[in-house]
Image 1 (cartoon, rainbow, N blue to C red):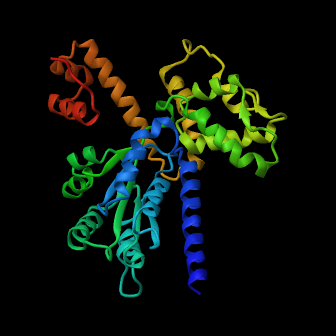
Image 2 (image 1 turned 180 degrees about the horizontal axis):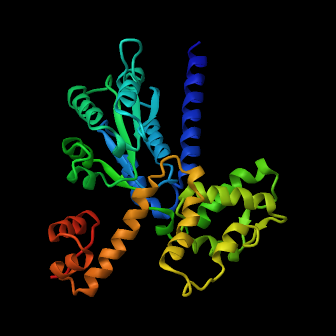
Image 3 (image 1 turned 30 degrees about the vertical axis):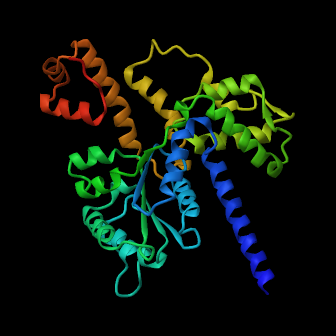
Length: 341
C-alpha cells in the first residue's frame, strides 16, 4: 500500500510539473525577453505576500499568476480568478466576500490563492475590505491575493481612484510584463512554439518559419500581444502547404505590412488607420481597457513633443497644451516622461 501511495504521489508531482510547463509555454515564459519576469516569478513563489502583475491585454497575466500558485507551497489548494471588470460595488462585494446565503470566493479558496483581474476597476469599498483582510489574516490558512491590471495603479492612487494604502502594500511585489513588441525575436519564438502545439491538432504540415515569415512577425507592433499572435498563427497553419510557414500564409499581416502613404490622410483618418488593428483584437482581449490604452498612447507622445518644442520649459509647454502647470507636472510624473534641467 505504501508503494501504491508513493506511486500516486510521484504521478501527482509529474502532473503538476506538466501543467506548469504548459502554462509557461502559453505565456512565452522561456522567451529571452522574459528574463526579469522569470526571476520575479521564482521569488514570488517563495513567499505569501500579495502581488500585482501589470501589463497590456493579451499577455496572459492570469496564467503567470497561476504559475506562481503552482510553484508555491499552496499548489494543492484552490486557485480562483475573479474579474472586477465593469462590476458594480454590490456585485463584486458579494462575489468576493459572500453574504448570508453563501460564502464568497475568498472564503472558498481556504488557504489557496485568489487572483483579481482588472484590479484598477475594484470599487474603493472592496479595496478597503481587501486591505483589511490582508493586514488581519496572515499564514497558510488565509487566502493569498494576486491582482492583474493594465492600469497604472500608482497614477490611479494619486488621483484617488485606487486606495493608496493598498497600492503601497502591493507595490513591494509588482512586475511589469513587457509587451511582445518590446521583446526582440519574441514573436517568431512564440510562433514556433504555437506551431508545435497546434500543427498536429490542425493536421497542418507547418512546424517552422521561413526567414520572410520571421521578419514579418518581428516587424509587427502586436497591440493584442500573445492573444493576437495565436490567432494569426492558427489561421496561418490551416493555410500552410509545406513544413515551413511563409509570409504569404499570414495573409492578415502581409496585407497590413504593405507600405501605404498617409500624407493625404487627415489626422482623424490616420488615427482610424492605426486604431483598426487594435480594435480588431477586442474579441480576444478579456481585459481591454481600450480607452485608457489609447489615451495613454496619444497623451504621452503629445506631451513629449510639446516639451521638446518648448525647450523643456514647463510653463510654455503647459500654456501650449492649455493645461495648468501643476497638471502638466503631475502628468510628466505619471507618464514617466523625463525632463531636462
